[in-house]
Every structure is written in structure tokens, then in C-alpha cells.
Image (cartoon, rainbow, N blue to C red; front, side, top):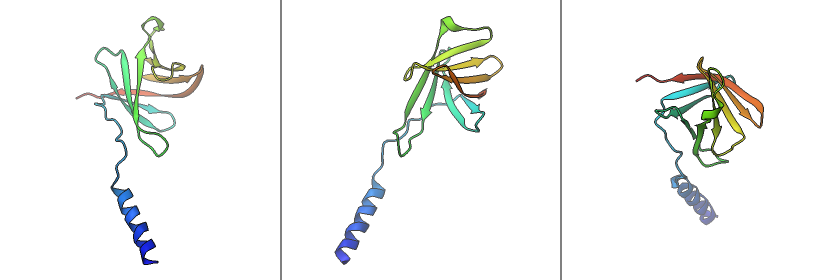
Length: 119
């Protein structure tokens, strides 16, 4: 009985020392505050042609990055359009007013406001 308890405790201690893959970090210079209350930090490239988001690590998925690239031919008035390089049917529209719209397969999923950090 003592052997089983020792084995269980030893396994638990070893499992606590093992580190999973680290989620990526980005040098955030902006964020989007979504209408559902979630805020996501991102890195806006100097030219504004790419937006890079760090996806947090969770139990169900490893962390990674998501990159949205600007569609230069799709500028509509005061709004720019971006597509996700990992999921082409995921689009983001960002207007000069700071309004952000997230669109997946033609359906609006979320709306929010863009904030650029000033250092």
C-alpha cells in the first residue's frame, strides 16, 4: 500500500515539473477590444500590411500565432480588409474610425475597437 502511494506521489511531482510548449510572445503595439469583452493584443507591422496575434496556450491547443495580411486591392472607402493566412475564409475589416469587424465565411462573428499603443 505504501508503495502505491509513493508511486502516485512521485508521478504527480514529476508531472508538475514537466513544462509544455511555451506560448509565443509578440511585441504588442496595439489591441482590439471586442464587443464580447475580450481584449486581444497584436503587433501591427510598420507598413500596416500585417497584424500578428499570439494565440494563448490552453489545454486543448498549443499556442501559436495568427497573421492577418492586408488585401491591398480591397480597400473600401475608409476601411482596410485583411485575411487570415491560416484560415483564408476569416477576414477582418478595420476602418479609420477604429471600428473592427471579424468575418468568418461571410458571417459577422464579432465587432470591436482598435487601440494603437503610443510609446
